[in-house]
Structure formats: structure tokens, C-alpha cells
Length: 142
Image (tube, rainbow, N blue to C red):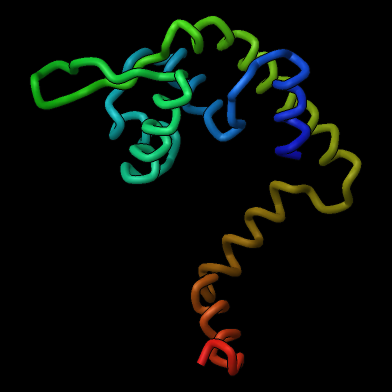
């Protein structure tokens, strides 16, 4: 599915955009400049993860950092390049959400339920624990 979304961007001549950047770009377009902490909280990610993503997005030309409210803080803001496509990204987001609803209607087991069930199972036993258990049984790891 991610590859198909990337294909939509390529067909729409939106070059160099990773699908994983879109949520943050849309959030910045909606709410305006934010610190990395604010942006991370708004999309449910850690500060560390967002800091790395913002650095990559900055290198790719989608965001820039500007001085914040005080000398110690920086805010992330959209570049002109990002502002030029953000309405199209919002349209793609809406179309993707609608396509997911259509897909779920065709399935006997909705994707949203799969996510909930996986989260419950991982609360019982983490993915790390599951991997460690398998590795403990593999002589190549030991």
C-alpha cells in the first residue's frame, strides 16, 4: 500500500517525497510552525524519532527550522516547496482514507481491528520477548 501511495506522488510529479513525511507536513500546514516536541506530541511519536525525521525532511527540502520564541528553541516550518504541494497532499490523504474504508468494507476482518488485536497481543508479550525467545532457540545466535 505504501508503494502505491508513493506511485501516486510520482505520477503527480511530487518528487523526493517519502510517504512517511506527509502526516507531519499536513500537521505543520494546519497548525503552523512547531517545536520538534510539539510536532512529536501532535503525531504521537517520540522526540528522538521526530528529530531524526525532521533532519531528513530538512535535507530533502520539505521543512526548515527557524528561531523559536526564545534563543534556545527552534521551530519547524514548511518550506515554499512544501507549501506548494500541501493542498495536494491533503487531497491524497483524504483519498487514501476513503480507499482504506472501501478496502475494509471488502474484508471480513477490518484492518483497524487487526491493529487493535496486535496491540493487545503485544501487551501480553512484547515483540522483543517474542524475538528473543526465537533467537534463544537458534544455535547461530547463541
